[in-house]
Length: 143
Length: 327
Image 1 (cartoon, rainbow over the protein chains, first blue to last red):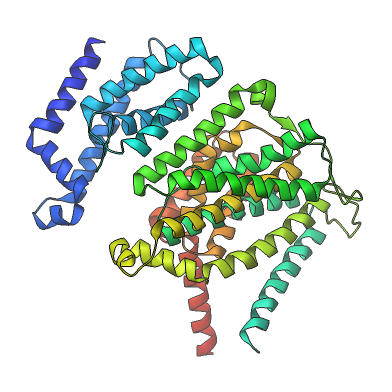
Image 2: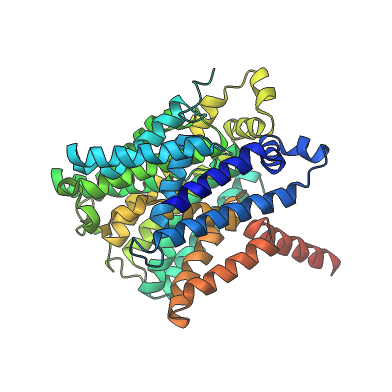
């Protein structure tokens, strides 16, 4: 739990308050202009991929003591991760945190009311977020 | 020889080739080949979406399952036993559903499009999975032996032409027809419109093209192909389950499209055949390492030939032509 918060804070700081984070954002926003400004885009992609893989590995390592593991169990989590990222907004660490809490509580509530729709809730929230708030729930409506 | 006769000859020859393969091979090989052709129907739809429209859909499995389940549910709740009626109903359901889903999906682009189609696919998966009293849940539904026009069963040996099975005959017939239809679709104005939008959307809009309409038509066509494939899969496999719309199935279709090169119909067909035969026979020869082996083979293809099987086929035909003109 504590490790999770620490990693969250660290990732948030790296992405929002360092030069590396700014370079990440710039590359994601416009690849060609970043190249023109002298950013090594290939290196940035490698860093971003490495960071993502590291965080995923940490997630798996932190989860293993409490949940059962089997090969191929990742397929369930990868779609949930996609859903959380989309709902939180791409490139938004704060949004992802809030979205993951929202998803978990929404599932927990729905399972009491309509048990059949428990898993579908995540994807229904994801669907309406993409249609109504393409930038993520924290950002305003796109004009 | 005019262009039309060459084209007709091409389809006739491919049909004859597929028939001859059916005469000579066992039922097992025909089953895998028929499954590969069913896969290639979905992949042709994805080639149009990815290669021509530039939209990566992770929800083709949804229409695949809608086609399959419309057959299963019609049999379960309405007792329809005519294969031709079920085929038409399956196509109609999936086309209507792709219109409804497409209206929402085609408002988005790129990652958002991939995510929204993924969301739709997973919503349909959870509905099929959780409303088990209605859909059979994880057990899926069994499809009884159906008959065309009350006489011609969809599975079995009633044709008595060497080894040719009915299911293989039906699927290659539909397949050749769809091949013709898709070729026409690729050479239609709508496909040129799609390519124009893919290259420069702003420019295309300023020329008076409506991207939403063109995208919707491409989406509906891909949904129709996937639905047809699902219906045929229900006939072939006699059993359907919710995994048809799980995201790994949809991702498998996208993967085959990438393997085929994502820009041409022949690549799509050969990629589906290669994928299914490799998957089947690698299990036989490398019992515990088949996923490892399949991963290595596909990694090599993608790293060494970025334009997929289409690129490889092009290279071979070009060098063959060169060799022929030299001699």
